[in-house]
Image 1 (cartoon, rainbow, N blue to C red):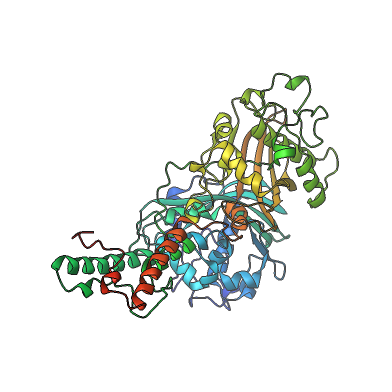
Image 2 (image 1 turned 90 degrees about the vertical axis):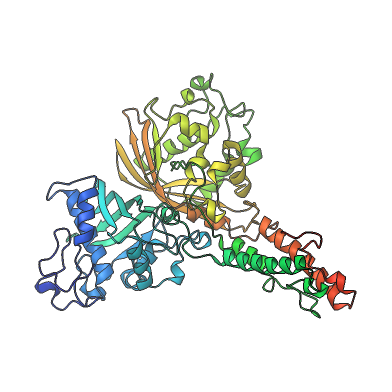
Length: 573
């Protein structure tokens, strides 16, 4: 995109040309041009903001900041950020300084989710500033456009929803181009100074929505696993041919065994090595895991079997954070487990470890309790007509810009399945919503978080009727998760939600933006308690090869050295 002459500037970006840039050090020797991506932006944007509007101002400010970060070599040449104060954080992670952000580059800063390397999607630790830009420039030759969808609050703390998109007309990490539009949505919180320069930028989104689509194309070159399998097939084929030809019996000795060696390591064994790599790197085709609905996030409070999930016989006292549990209004309510739940365990965790204690009656406390009530109804009430926290017939729930679910759809799939439908998760072995039921999903997280899964409001950015707020969700992994041993560690994630309410403060629309990898990455840290199918296959194979090697080394009759993979009476494999 860089060009030798950009003296005319750009209609969406400032600080590209003029006297103020005469001493600027450009990363590629000259200021860039943005004609290609501007054409994509103008052809496919969903909003065209009036000149001078807050939306246009924010949109152009972010485009300018991205230009400086990608093309200016020194932080001192940046005009869009407040010197010495700038910080960037993604999905609640550690804030990066301006110098740190400039060193790693925008892609490495935005794609540091712990789930991505294991999914074969992206490894920020293995990429440089230049290599990361090369990857996405190749995948999106028409550019990677960006727009503001809506602004929720104005300066000095600006909260806004954005959309980022391109067309995969080029390859990505060995995956063939699909030609498809690849896009994701997110929410950003931008704190600015009096000159509208950025001091703090927080971004909330799911990187799996971007990278999942980039992995859909078939592999252009074989993976390590496929190449090992191909070589193995060729070697077995050669031996089978010799066996069928009636050649001397010694030609049938196993090609994987060297006489005199008693052990066959996983590295000497192509199958074992291949399977081990497959398990640890999780590669392969993730293009189709059934019909994928990008469902919204709810706020499930994990429930201890004896204290939270199993309904108590007596909960007449209600709950200090949740409404609509008891009383005349609930006398006809159908509860999933026969009676209303109790929340003693998770309330104890919440009170012990919350970072905020909001004044009674404050907007923050009101929002916090409303969400806890809604989660309770979603997890424990069997019929939507018994919900008091949502507007009947109007409720919609979406996560990370995905298709909105109706109330009935949300109730059918359950909170965790609504939350965890990122396309990157099944391929990473982290979670597959299509394979889980309402009950099995709750069982998984109840086992992992026996003390509960607490939730709190961190900050409210805008008030009714459209409430924008930041939240934190956390628990302690004192139990196993999908075969991974407990770590005892605190597992937490942050996000931003947008809640539209009616006159009675009942939810009509809920949008949530967060990275599910921040939750699941923490749950996959523990060692496997039982071997995976791949590891078990490799172990059995190793045992068979080891037995054959011992026989070979013992000086037994030659016929004992027959390859365990070949039947002498069969001419074809």
